[in-house]
Image 1 (cartoon, one colour):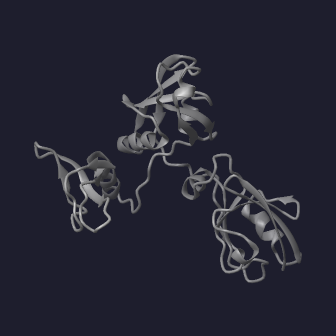
Image 2 (spheres, helix red, strand yellow; image 1 turned 90 degrees about the vertical axis):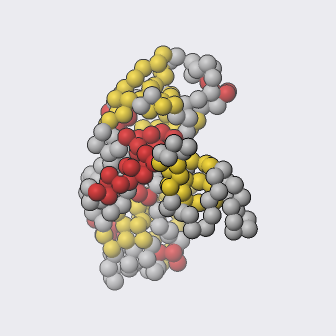
Image 3 (cartoon, rainbow, N blue to C red; image 1 turned 180 degrees about the horizontal axis):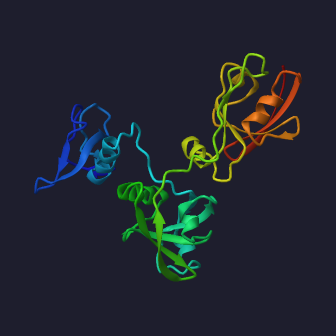
Length: 265
């Protein structure tokens, strides 16, 4: 968002935020308020990001798609800058890369520091994604990278998260031990949609259904194994919860926690 002290009041959302020359710089969105009126702190969506939304809508998209980075990272603070060869804090140190990440394809490695996108400095992952979104899907971005104290520039393709292999979504039937549970095989698109850790693999719960929460399952849980058997795809999950086995021990991953659930059918 652009933060502005221009008065924005209820009902102004969707209106233009312009500069002194009458140029559109944003679309008013929200205000910080305790009373319901403007306190002089408002927020607007930047005009270049709005343009990216409009372009996708005109192309027939019904939901906005941001370019997929396929990496994890954190801002470089003062303690990290020196050892990384930086003269001041700034940039994003790469801590993880998905094999299908376009950054991985461009040659980035864990430990590299991303300092700019299209010559604009970036200091947080959110800033990086914003710059990529402005450039738009199907294009490429020039990314400045510091490695071992040397600055280099690479070209990164701006792509949506690949929806391969097939997510093979299933909904367990009435004869299953967890009828109504909906699950999918994990791929980059599913990782992006469900905000899963990059290293996630196997099967994720899309909808725990009516009975899943009763045994401790939640949407977004990654099912790792059932009764000691690894769940590598949705076909395996269907077979393992077929109802022929009455005692179940299920190992799941929820965020950074691994949990064991035990229940009877």
